Picture 1 (cartoon, rainbow, N blue to C red):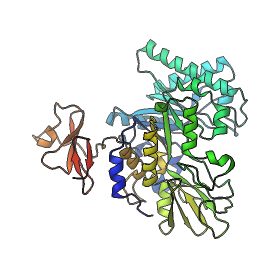
Picture 2 (cartoon, rainbow, N blue to C red; picture 1 turned 30 degrees about the horizontal axis):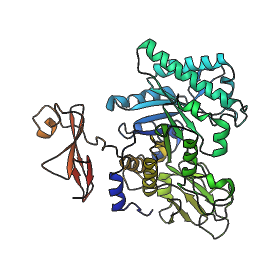
Picture 3 (spheres, rainbow, N blue to C red; picture 1 turned 45 degrees about the vertical axis):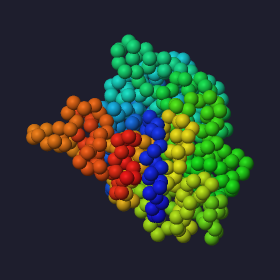
Picture 4 (cartoon, rainbow, N blue to C red; picture 1 turned 90 degrees about the horizontal axis):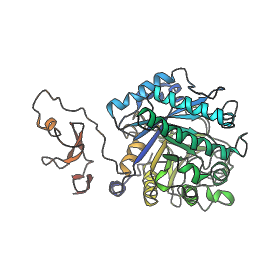
Length: 453
């Protein structure tokens, strides 16, 4: 795959102001992928994201929150143990899914008593398993068998849950649980599903699912997560892009600081039906399923690295996203260059940060893309202006090592290394971590960043 990140791109991303949230989803079904694609909580870097959302739990017939997989509660322990390494990490449990194609939210929100039962159950479950909050993943109120008045019932659920979280924190003298929601990106769905102003005030952050704008269900190729409209778009498709979607959320008075832009770590695939390969080329269905995700219609980023080594890589300038094609296969995906463009857009619009779907579809092991572990999310983190992560073991404190002693008594933060400008120190809880800038760059204390000499 072409290496599209240039030195100029690196320099630009080093100066982008930091948004305060980088929320990453993990899925409990990724544990069933074969070989080195198997993913569990043990594969998570505790310093990569500010928040990790565990997907997915559900709601049983008694309106109680309940796990889905046989080992979910074991995974909860492993996930929340990451906070021993990084006490600043926040974890949330996501609830959603379907049973026979029907959302469990539909029955639960129908009556005040069932909502109250669910909320009480959720608080108890989150506290028992050491989560910091709940993520609502109802796709979507007023859709897929859901009555149209579920739009208003969703507002009631969010309002009542927020109040219950406040009461629980006050009565038990605990930190208040966080409340977030995954929400639609397509304008017709937004209109039907949400009373935006009413729910936004009660949510700590809102994950706008700015992906799946196009896919193999269409008869022509389109990008999974384009930043802007393309000249190929017509009709309702003119709104199938990030700029249109998030602008609509903002027009409905969603606070920008609560909106998190969705960054996919996968691409949507097509089977080309003619020799044409450009955006808008005729297609009929998906390309063959990836060897690890094994689901027709999308490839994980690591599968894209693995599968398209001999592919032709292209860039869509008007949408600022890449695609690749080889033989009859076509995939529109994201890479470091498109992530950088989206972060610049996100920052210009003062959004609260980013959310990633998912940790387990990035090259989390570093086995496929020759760019280290989590290449996309690490690049996203850097592009957003977060300080470098602790990546080395603190020096032993049993001897008088001057590097190990550096952070004793100093506040957490980044510090220049006067002995070597290509490196710098990070102090975290009294421990010293030595980091090295990328080749050709040196550390500048004025910006707390690596930059050109």
